[in-house]
Image (tube, rainbow, N blue to C red):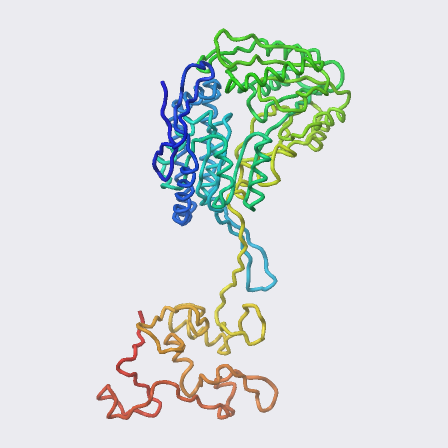
Length: 630
């Protein structure tokens, strides 16, 4: 049954303006699985505009709310696991068992990133100023362009889209042309989980559409997984315009087998790593390097296991190896085998051909010299080459003799040899007594040399660096009893202490019942709880009633609060307005000049029945705003 598919832009399914394309089942090439209209430049512009418009609201939603949406998406993936697995097997060709494993791993990926929303955010660093601190926080990049391959049509998009959405980015996703149906199902799940319109957009289109996506100036970051030539092309475009880039490319992974290795474990792991998923993994074993003499038992077990593999349609429960993704991929793999045979290689073992038509490649084990082309260039299929090395150092050098450096494996009972391999193998992931394939979502994933880009890794919390760059703001601590002005002439934000001293602040707190630092006398830039209704006269300083009572009057002239008067004896300095300490010298203080509204006579007083006005008695004008407590 053919499934229709469309691009998803701004919360709606949109028919592309390009040509109509169908995806056929690699197990039955005459069976159309998915049909869709290809998206073009017009749809790309719509998707980027939708992502731009949706970005502010998505950022303000908060990381915990975004994490709950990802958790809902994980639950929906598990609910629709059988549907997704069947579409994946029909489009890709992998077995149903492998498809279901990928669906489960993808749901776990969304759950992992949803849970990381509650992890601590930012780091605090000391400052050279004692009342300041330095904090790091992460902010979203903006629009993230996502380009994914066909070999893991659900898991790799989950690796890239989940952390991008969690950290507040919007996404424009150009999916692989071979697996459009799986992409449509994932986008439908994200929309059902609560991702707002415009936050996640899907484009079903040809390869050149990816070049347009990464070239767009509004795309702040790009994450890509695919072949090395395409990755180098994208790197030139993205880095040339200064955008952020994260890439994972191909691999030519080696498995080292030492004489003391567990033969059964090594043979089973090597065959599974080389032939699983029809060899269409970037972490698949491409070379097996036997260290030292012997290994007859290992070779016999490998030959036995490979010849026992069953090829056929992925929907058949008895099948272990499905077809490759396309006819062109099949022809390319078979051509590489023929080239190896002409360069001195020999076939050690080969699985029997299937009884049905389809894009099948027989799993093949080759032996021969290390100079063969297939020992250096990646062949994306079920083919592995066995090489020999006299010593461990020679084996490590042989394993490193390639432009790739994604994963490696070593089988040995010698802990010292294992540590040596982990240290000196040029691979981003080295596994001991385990297959070269597979990774954990909570551990960073990436390679070396041409297998990656010198940037952030995938998975783990390290992926946050790819989607949320670090900012480092400088925040000044807020202290009670400080003024805005700086009496010391310093250019930093350290303030002079209030000359009223600690006793004045304590009295202020007892009277008003709130901390002294909230008083606008100490911080004129902030509002205190004693808010003035209406507008103050221009230039007026807002003070709470407690400070007005403490600072005005004859005993504490406000005009002298910012001055320190020396004691006549010269022995010590007093704070102005301190009656006990100043004693008989308090008469030396100047009286505060009246700066309030003009004085009135008793006849002019708007409050009849009160005592006669005295000079300096303040009566507000009728139109002057009244000071009241909220």
